[in-house]
Image (cartoon, rainbow, N blue to C red):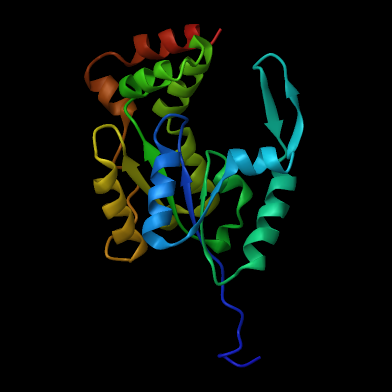
Length: 208
């Protein structure tokens, strides 16, 4: 196969983060700016019935990651010249790392995130679970472990406008800015205020 005939490599941007950080709005706007096809993972999983079982204790369905991974791979490979933006907190686990250009991990200060989740009428136990995940950097660590630091970029949605966030994302995608990791630490912030042990204890109690 000649260089001109070589099949183009997929270009996939991931958007991940704890529920409530603003992934859906961010992904949709980034998709409009880049003319990429946006795939919302939760809808994709529901549409293709990629579930293993029902977790009755947590009142949720457990995703079948392998089935999701296979179906997404087929979707991406079917249109290798098309740019994709795949949004959802499980995205680093279901997309082949070699297809990923950048993974944006959206972050939000736990106190602000709590307000957002309360507005969505999340139960207290679910709010506590998600706040614990955010303060402990769960989505960030998962993305870095799966993709490597060079492909991961954190964006703080706490008070930044969507326009500011999109502008930075476009600069990262255009390689004007390097992806940034490690610039956000809610643990350090709570530790400096002397509030970390009490805060974590309250979250642990709230999960029960």
